[in-house]
Amino acid sequence: MEEKELKERMIRENEEFRKLFEEHQKHEQKLAEFKEKSFLTEDEKMEEKELKKKKLVLKDRMYIMMKDFQKSL
Figure 1 (cartoon, rainbow, N blue to C red):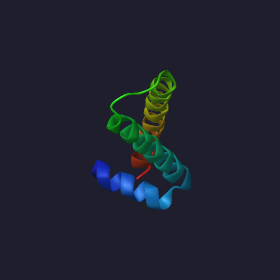
Figure 2 (figure 1 turned 90 degrees about the vertical axis):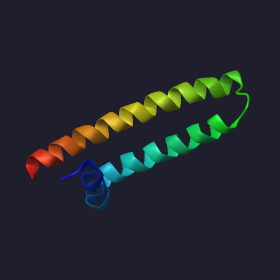
Figure 3 (figure 1 turned 180 degrees about the vertical axis):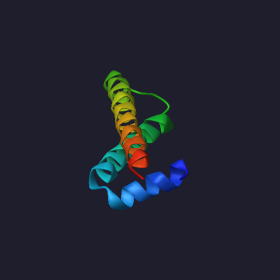
Figure 4 (figure 1 turned 120 degrees about the vertical axis):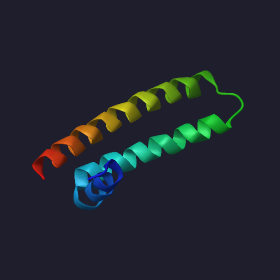
């Protein structure tokens, strides 16, 4: 099963995965808003760094779940 198919299936069938994915998307959206700005305050720069870290942690957790799910098939 391809990665995209696997992710879509897990979003439909696994509530924990779906919550992680939704949180990841929220962080992605907020980071996109920061990119649109021509200038970031120091607080925004700190928030941007934290969001990037959180997003990476979420992505890692999702990939571990995907890998485990794929093994169980």
